[in-house]
Image 1 (cartoon, helix red, strand yellow):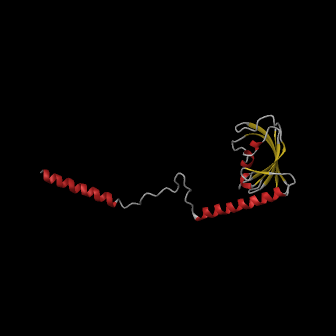
Image 2 (cartoon, helix red, strand yellow):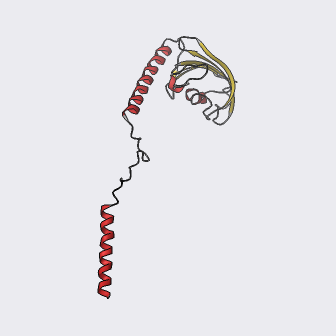
Amino acid sequence: MIRSGMRGLAVSGLAVLLMLMTGCGGKAPQTPSQRKGQAPEADSATLALMEFNSQLAKAADKTVMDAVQAQEEPFALYEGQTWMHIVETGDTDGDLLIPGQAYSIHMRVYTLDGRMLEDTEGTYLLGKAELPAGIDWNIRELHHGAKARLFIPWYMAFGPKGNEHIPPYENVRIDLEIR
C-alpha cells in the first residue's frame, strides 16, 4: 500500500515537473522596452524624428550664432545655447534673482530679423517652467532692475509648438527687463 502510494506520488510529481518544463504553450512574457538608466527602444520612425530634430537644433544654433556675431555689443554664451548681453546691470547691491521667487518681467520677443512677435509683461515664478528655459535658466545671472538682450534657439525658446503669437521652431531675440 505504501509502495503504490509512493509510486503514485512519484508519477504525479513527474507529471508536474514535465508540465513546468514544457509550459502551457502561451507566449513568453515580453521584455521591458525601457529599463532604469537605459534609453527606450525606438522604432525607425522615432529614430528618424530624433535625428531630424537634432539637425534642426544644429541649424538653429548656427543661425542664432550668426545673428549674434552681427551685433555690435558683446554677447556671452550661457546655458542652453542662449546668448545674452546685459544692457543694464540693475541693483548690483542686491542679490541675484532667486529661483522660486516671483518677478515682474517685461519681454519683447522678436524674430532674428527684427520683426516684433510679442510684447508682454507679467509676474513669473523663477524656476517653475513659467518662462521658456533659455530665459528661466539664464536670468538667474541678473539683478532686480536689470535689462538684457537674449538670442535663443527655438528649442530653448518656444519650441516646436510656439504659442499664439510666436510660430513653431522660431529662433528669437528677446529684450527683457526685470522690474
